[in-house]
Image 1 (cartoon, rainbow, N blue to C red):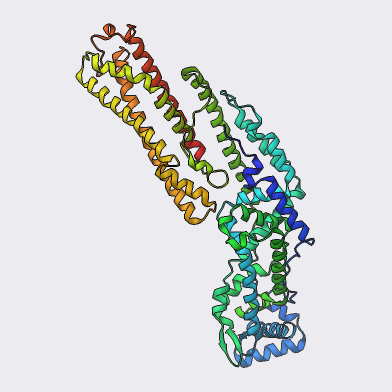
Image 2 (cartoon, rainbow, N blue to C red):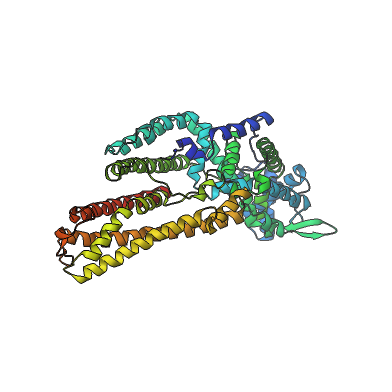
Length: 568
């Protein structure tokens, strides 16, 4: 039986030692937590009063000005008031945040081009790490995150919910699975509210950063044009939708906890395919330091660019508000569902081991062996760290062993039956002859497969070359995937060939022994007069062959099912 990973190892994908080493490096190099992110302070009217009431609350002079201008311009007082308030907002931006806009010409100026360019580099730093969350189930990241924020909960699940804490046995209690799932729910329900709040803050940070890195930086910057006189400029009305996207994210206040950043890095290390070699090779402490620097750059942008005021100006509406970012509320549901999926995987493996234990008892009973035979050549096991999974490992090993060690016992007796037996139905003789020959060819196929996978065989030599090269390049991985796919297809064909031939032989033998209710399969006239070389009754030999082939077929069927189940 192969060694089973702990729940925590299944959740994190890296060992406890590896994770602790990385965390120690982070903590040694960086001592401060990431600063909270807050938007710039902007003096905007957030009341929902109608314009008419707002105008009444203004000074007599302003009300008179609005009244006169509305008459002269044939415009509503509300429109004039909105215009006046926008003028105030523009004046405030130009005074407190100089160089961003030219309100007279309705232009964004070069600094408003330069700052999002810097912000884009911040997004580029985080994006490859966040991709590992985007492409996997979010819930799995929350489980991963919880191993750092809620280590006691993970330990509780490990102790009380792991099926492998129960001895492997052929007999499984009917209520065992539901009992373990109830314990899991009880652990979820007992998580303190403070711990849930910490998880929620981290979940919000995760979703906020994922949305931040996908802001339309390129589309926004593409709207600016360059001139020698003014540098990069852009008309207000050209970037309405882009400003909406930026405001929704950058007008929100939140914290990015270090626990989240640590989990983000570790999760990306586990899923190294999501990051480049340079990013994957980045030192753990170096990552946290650069993450803090990037977040500092982000905070500098948020505090120095009045993004909501800019949204009011761009939309020509001084009461304009963005739909503020909100996400992460469903973290607990996704977290629980992910844990249940991990439990299902563990349960499936444990249940399969129990079934293997039952099969092992049958191997002892029918074949006098107390182990699952291995195929003599398995070069995929030596590849990289821990080898490559092969679907039909147990099935191939047993079937090869049976064809080599046990079918040879049946072979002579089946050949004697074919030569000396006087079949009542000729088609039964023909069917047995064809199936017997197929089994002989199958034995040869297993010998050929052994040769191919040996170090001197074509496939074994290729595996050995990749093993000696050590490096797990994309080209090597692709070649291994191709070879494993071809090998599994070949082995699947061998298994099915055995199944077809064995069933066909069994039908004939059941008829020969008078055990078949199907009239198509009949006995032989001289069964009781055929003797083996020791002058023993031949019928006993046929019964033995039937039992050997039948028991082997049943075990192969169950092993194939278990192998496929474990490979999922």
